[in-house]
Image (cartoon, rainbow, N blue to C red; front, side):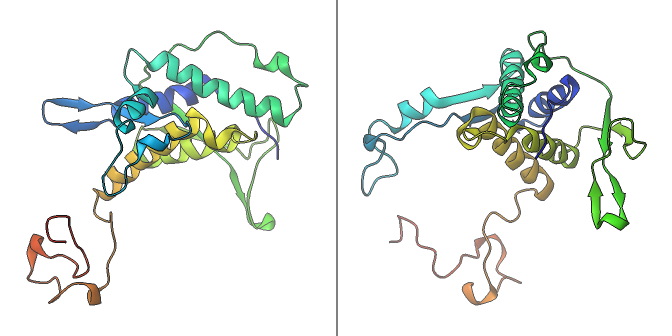
Length: 220
C-alpha cells in the first residue's frame, strides 16, 4: 500500500486527546499510561500468585505516561514511528520528505478533519489524488469518536514496517483507543454473560448479581 507522514496537527490532535481524555480520579487526574514492549522475565510470574518477585519493578521500568512535561517526547515518538513506516514502504527513496523541525506540542482550539469521498461506483471509499475535490473538509472537535478515527488514520500510515506491533507508538495507540472506548461505553460491557449464566436473572437482583460460575479467591 502507499503511505504518507501525517501532519503536525494530526500528532497534536492525538497528544492533546491523550491529555484531555485522561481519567479523572479522586484528587486529580490519572495520566494516560502505557508500557513499552520488552520480553517478560521468568521471575515476573509465580505460580498461584498474581505476580512474581520482579513483576512490579519490571512493569515500572517499562511504563510511560503522557503529561505536559512529556508531550514533546511522545509527539516526537509518534512522528518517528510514522516516518519509519514511510521510509520502509518506499525503501528510503524519499528521505528528503522526512526533514522537519523537532516536534513541539502545540495546544489547538480548532482542528480541520479531512475524510475520503464515497464513490458508489467503486463500491466504497476512494482516496482522491492530490488536488482532487473528493476530499471533504470540516472543523473537527476533539471527541472520543473523532479520536478513534484519527488513531485509525495514524495507524494506517505507521504500520508499514515489521516492528510496528512491538513499538511504543502501537502501545500508545492501543491505550488511547481503550480510553476512548471506556468513555463512550461508560465501562458497561467489560464482561458479557448470557441469562443462563446468572442465577435467578438480573431484573430484581441489583448490583449483587454474580454469574454462578464466578469464583473469587475468597470463595474458592
